Image (cartoon, rainbow, N blue to C red; front, side, top):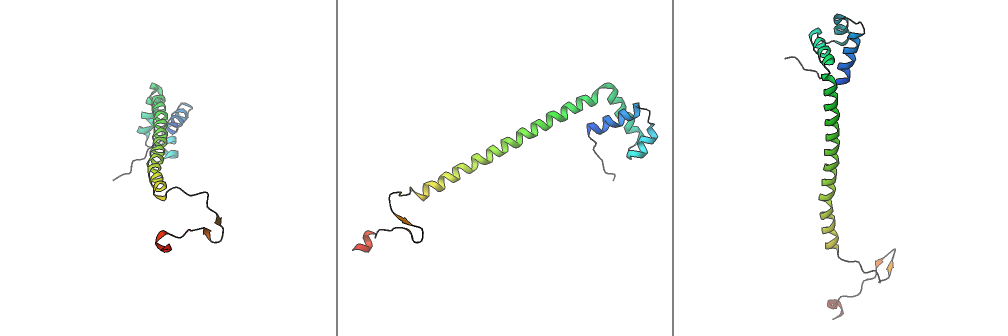
Length: 116
């Protein structure tokens, strides 16, 4: 089964403009490895202005994809925030008025169990 290739709107415009510049269908077909009938279709679309509509649709699609990616990043960030806050709650508040040592860590007072 043959593979289907997709070509950008800019490429289709380029081929159409080369055709109107005096290139033959045969020469374009050989140089770009595209069927002559496909080039005819692109030239007809170019003349009808349909390639401009395709370009506008491609730009709109690209803008939508960028917006979706931004929203996905925001959702991911918001999904991580509750987990971070849960971890902070479990750690408990730090006591800041106790002396600490860089070598031994915070000073630990004996628990009531050890005193008795």
